[in-house]
Image (cartoon, rainbow, N blue to C red; front, top):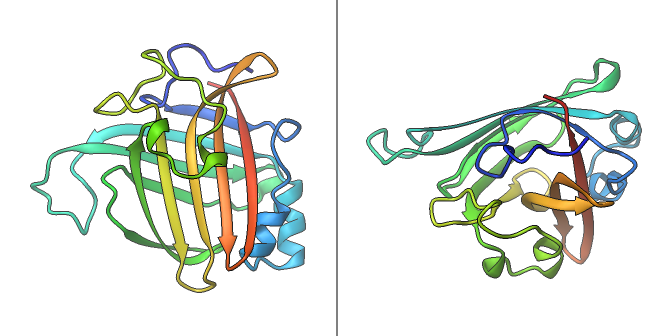
Amino acid sequence: MAAPPSKTIKDLSGKWVMNKSQSSPIEPALVIQGIGWVTRKVVGLATLTLDVKQYSGPPSPPAEPSAPEVTHIEIEQTGTGGMKGTTEKRCLDNAFREHSDWLFGTVRGQTKWIATADIADKFLAEGWLEGADEAGGPNGETHVLSHVESLDNGWTATQTWGFQLVDGVRKYVRHVVVAKGTQRAELTLVYDYLE
């Protein structure tokens, strides 16, 4: 289902479901991340739903509580068949924060607003809708950039979030690059809007 015009990178709040037929297979990235075969198969079969809450508030620790308000994006992921999901808590101030979950172990990540012109990786920068209707950041940025480093397994995952036309329909999309040493997997994850 198409993303309504009211849904932009400035307001992702709502429910989104991964469109598996329009998304890349995720197994190559999970292999690089050291996820075991059985877990990879279960994750690969599941369809993920994202329940997104986006709001402004004081930055999360380790930032000082008196720092200016920033955008927060909190995402509860659930999989079909009762598969346990993960929780993403993004604070868009570009500060590193540690997190641990059952799937990826201990990681540290940072998230910020970014303009397409400032995205260094060609894959992460390609195909996005641009313009005033897509702008959401404090300086007119049209994307979110997330960078995560595994403290347990040595991989990195860098994502850009935004909107693209997929088969002529406007959709929420994430471009993801997972890398470790010389290994690299590029994923395009496409989400349909539910509510």
